[in-house]
Each structure stands twice: as structure tokens, then as C-alpha cells.
Length: 218
Image 1: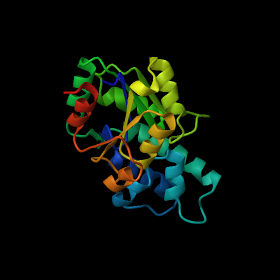
Image 2: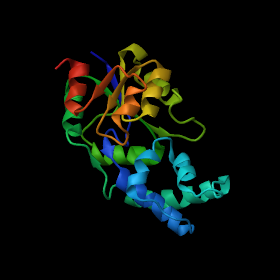
Image 3: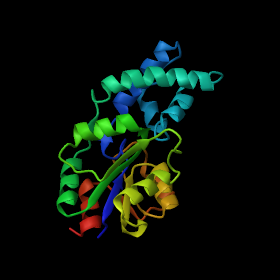
Image 4: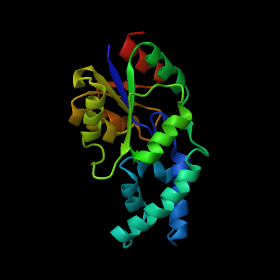
């Protein structure tokens, strides 16, 4: 049994892609740049919003100044609209509740900026007692750097061997590897199974209930 499960947020617990796409397209429009179709965004997100803006801006416009301008427009819009269309994936609430009842500590480690990460978790999962919720913080490198996971291990007083890290992308699998925790990839998120397979996680699951079976043996 694992004592701690750390979850990625976007593409793992919540399907947030519509709200992310709308906020990014809003920022692009406000600054006079072309927008992108929804289908492009699953491969643009996952490395923090500054990297999203870099990918979204047209060639020749990917300057630090434009990234800062995009961030200002995006955050102002996203803070007001981040729950318009986002929803938990089917089975997520039941899985979290079962893990909590089984005595497992639960945490979130996201490359989404910290304020939005905490707001979304509190909004969609108020029934869950989270041992730690960390988003991307100023001065802390984004995943796959392991610092965010190491900070959670320190807060929860759980060792790496007793921890399962769950995410939907290659970045998440690299994060787990770098932090020396057990990696579990989920196939319902933004990235294809093949991306997960390339990183050789200990587990790949197709349903949230399978995480319960891994952690609690049920």
C-alpha cells in the first residue's frame, strides 16, 4: 500500500482544456495575435503557462515582453472563467473518496500557477482533505524538475518509496522518475498512451478505479 498519492491536475483530475484554450485565445485576441483551434491545445499545455504562451505566440513574436503581456491578459481572464467548462473526469470523485477513506494522504502537484491550482481544487473537491496542494510558484522550477514533489514529501513526512505519482503526460512521468517516486500514467487525459509508454512508468491505467487497486489493493 502507498501512503501518499500525488496527482497532476490538468488532464488527470480535471478536464480543463476548454477553459485553458478560451483564456489563451482571449489573451491572443487582446494583443492582436491569431488564435488556435481547441484541438491544438492538448499539446501546448503541461509545462506552465509561460511555456503555453511561448508555444501560442507566432514566430517572431515569442519575446519575453509578449509573454508577460500574455500572462497579464490570461490570468485576469482565467481567474474569472477557470470553472466555466472544466469538469472532473468520470470516476475521479469516487476514487479520491475511496483513497481518503482507506487512510491514504492525497496531494496535488501542478504546473498551473499556484493560485489557480488551489482555487480549482477547493472548488471541485471540497469533500477531500488534501495534505498538500502546490501549483507553480515564483522562483520554483516547473515539472519535470522534482522540487515540487520533494516539497510535498517534506510537508507530508512521507518517503519517496511510499508515494505514487499520477499524471497524464510525459512531463509527469519524468517528474516521478526525477523525484524517485512510483509513476502511474493515466490514459484519459491530454496526451496519448504512446507518450506515457516511452517513459516506462510502473503503471498505466485506463480507469480511476485502477488507482484504488494499486494503492489499496482493492
